Length: 236
Figure 1 (cartoon, rainbow, N blue to C red):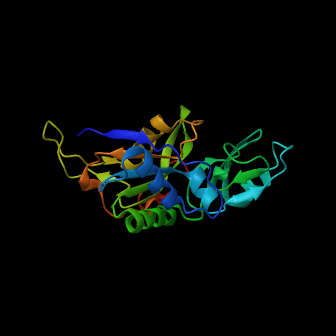
Figure 2 (cartoon, rainbow, N blue to C red; figure 1 turned 45 degrees about the horizontal axis):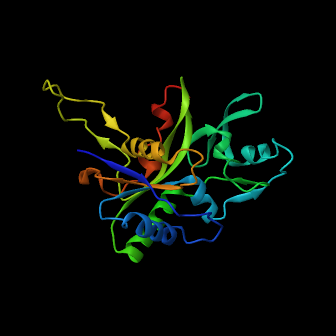
Figure 3 (cartoon, rainbow, N blue to C red; figure 1 turned 120 degrees about the horizontal axis):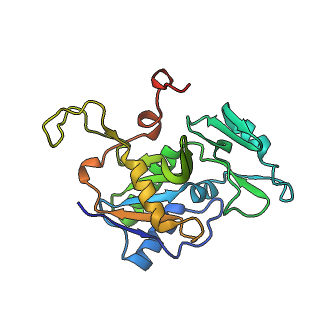
């Protein structure tokens, strides 16, 4: 299997109330020959939040003015160190500052996570099917840190039309041994791959991954599949 990954250019600034699916489909058609059946469209959380109006005013002269929002958007504080808060959101994500972000947002505003990123992905997918007549999978991606490892990577916080996990349990390895625990978070891998072409300051809010195994395409909910059950979590 080989993959082609490219960022969608010509999207422009997204404002609250914009039809994000229509904008992305039009930009893909104008600059890249259009979306195709079987494409995976990876859309950054920031533009989804902007389009859905998940922007909250903050004091532009106070770099800590968003901290009360972090407390409000958290259901559990995992760790504090100085101004940094690691918390669990109502979505089940454990991340820095409840996923609230000031980067690539108009001065004086903070972007909150979408209310339901799976629903956001489904809406984009359905709208593209209606407007462009193609069936794509959609991943909403966001940048996360990781315990015990330095550096950031993009992961999926929502998906539609693609399973979050490919389960290899019950299959065998190259030596014929049965696999008992191997579950691959393919939506996280695709989100990370897409970020390689998007970067953090390019102005491109979405990418297309082409050539994904058709066997991965199905309904998939990030919350149901990727969030580890507390009873199975050794670190809670």
